[in-house]
Amino acid sequence: MRKSFNGLCGLVTNHQGHNPLSGDVFIFINKRCTLLKLLFWESSGYAIYYKRLESGTFEHPHGEGSSIQINAEDLLLILSGIELQSVVKKKRFCLPANVE
Image (cartoon, rainbow, N blue to C red; front, side, top):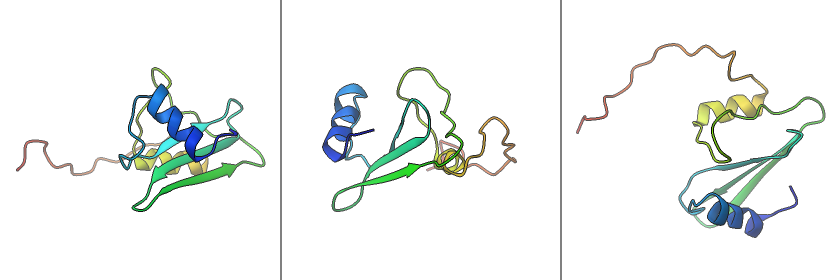
């Protein structure tokens, strides 16, 4: 967790194969799950959000490989300390994918 802007951009580009300028938010969690960094591109430069927990741990999202994709709702739940497996999501309207 010692990396800053250039180091995190290098990890995103070289190890994950993504473009850090895409507008996506890239999440980095340490092994003990007590530190979390978010790297994202704003309109004029990079921004880092850094959070250290005084007690407890962040939930590490489950998925295959070192790079997984989550939605903004799940990110907010992780930051709030809510377990993703215990969340019950109610049915909501979703626009069909083929609507033009």
